[in-house]
Length: 314
Picture 1 (cartoon, rainbow, N blue to C red):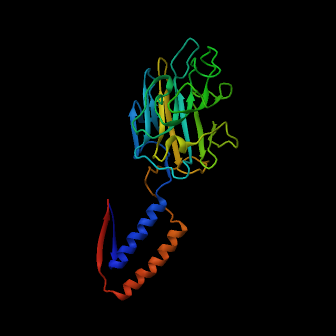
Picture 2: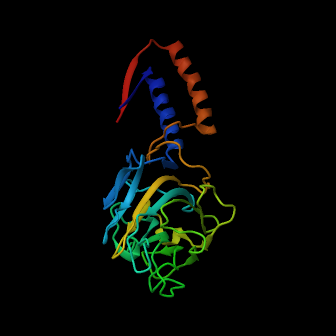
């Protein structure tokens, strides 16, 4: 509960207007989780759970067991008003893999998902938990080689890939990069991904690194019109993960999301749940309204006997 005192009727109304203007301008465009000790603002589904692993509070999408599926999405849908533009940065770690005739191999992978259905969707298996979610757009980090994957040659170790997908279709890859020669997606080390959508250009770009630094060039890019997919509907953003006959521990280590095209270069340093406005800095127009308002408040103080009105916001 937030309370404040307003001096006089006119000053009270003005204070409400100023406070409302500040809240609206700060309403956020950005939320972040430096870790997952606090999961405020998130809906956690299926096998997903916030756990302390080796001193780190992570969001575990799947445990190292077969036929698991977990997802996590922001609780309240958000409106992406700037041509559906957004930027997000997250670090994940996949390891403790199940054994195969080829040795331990991760399965099945995780996906960053933007969709309009609900905050409780998700599944298991080779579709990485996003199968059938439509309308949606996914960026998948697929650790297991399936017969429907591009470049499939029967070697389960040869098809670590990152891809852009649409409408819960785990077969048709819109853009694809086989990273097996340079990156083991289930190698048990941290990998950071950067996903940016420029709505003005209808361009979706994906970058990744092992050192947490944002690469200059995109590893994947694809022209796609999110407005034509989602219409005017608000969206849920988050992650899905699945296992099948084989498995991995699949963790999200940290996450920042910005509901504008504003590429994120640094990891989050704290937790800012969706819808919160910590450290809000008023925009120039709000500053002007505040300055004018303070003058009117001063005038009201000089002209009127002090009168206290109490407002509260839950």
